[in-house]
Image (tube, rainbow, N blue to C red; front, side, top):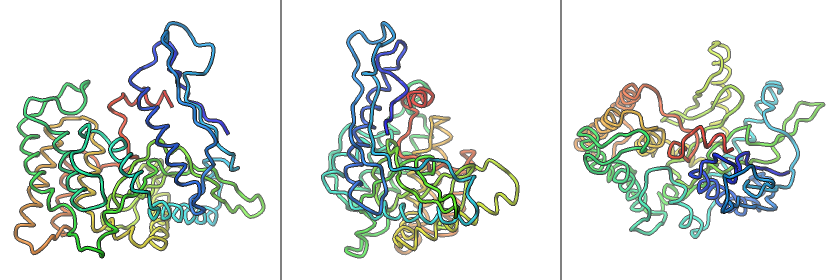
Length: 391
């Protein structure tokens, strides 16, 4: 099975800004495949060969006569096809959900080597981050606290500096600057307390697929019984490394995405149909999916609950696309300030109160929509349309 990028680095009008991302994504995917291939609980097509795109000195002057400018990846064909959801009977859909949940639990439990974590953490973390880290990459509370700190400092610099992407032409204003202060004050308290051996699992690095769904799975279906079988997961080029507390359970099927709410319960988004029966049916599927994950990886649910505030801030930053930074960060600043006030009168780190849930609803209302949790890598920095065309 051969996969080509549609975009050719030697074509006229090729966006050169895309090429470094294409190369980085391919190198990451190649490295991740080498890690996952030996694990029988994570079905994936064996990666046989990767050839990175080569841009010639005269690129763009004429239509190329070869495919040297295209990324090429060769996989062993595991059999099956994608997007079989709609053809499956209800029993088949339930079976597929349980298989996907089992694989998702295996991804969560997979232990990446320390060298892999150190090499890939920063390159795969979404914009904005410093070019290098002044502290060691390690699975500790201190490391992840520092990650939040440098991300805020890299995102909101000094008043008058550019904020977001150059094409948006925004600068840091007083509301964003005030939010920076509130967020930096809250960050030392945003993670659960370190309780030694009992909490080691919280800081463990987890490899995220980044676009987990049936569109990135090969699935066979038994013609006689309608029973599906997932033979491989693929297209991990949007993947990243996060700590266990920031795992993203999202699973995309035809017409709907299954996810978890802040308490670990099943929920959904991206509905293609507002029909009440369709909603009810997908809520059942979402609950089945989450419950099956927790059955195979109990710490998955503990991570979602223990990391409420950290998850909220992380996913909010990841979902921002440059719109009105004063309003967006102003809202986040109010949320952080209210959490600091709560912690000041509470004993310990009471990060899961009803007041916090109300604050989360308020910030979502300010931003106009709930933060979507799909994908690790943002694409705005390269121009979303150009990246999609390059794929």
